Image (cartoon, rainbow, N blue to C red; front, side, top):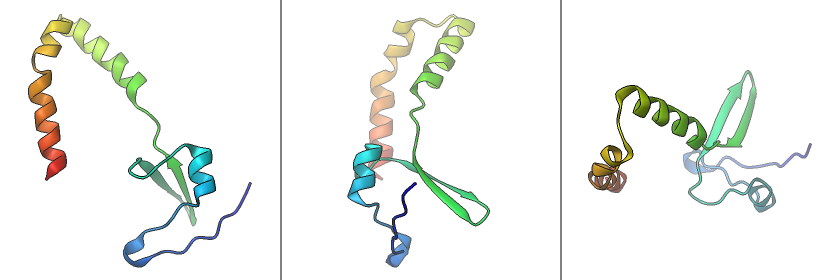
Length: 88
């Protein structure tokens, strides 16, 4: 276990040492999760949710009798909505 002293900057931001960024394979803009456990805080890379989402989508498709073409038909509109949301 290594310790890395960090300063809490104006606005509450912290800088993760480059050594840790490289080791954790995180970069600017990546999502991290901050956990509070009593007086301890843990900062960890957010784990990909894709495997869980794929299983959920497959189950919903099966239960609702929805095919891939049905899902893809609304994809472009959904992408545009997500893009607009990120821009605001």
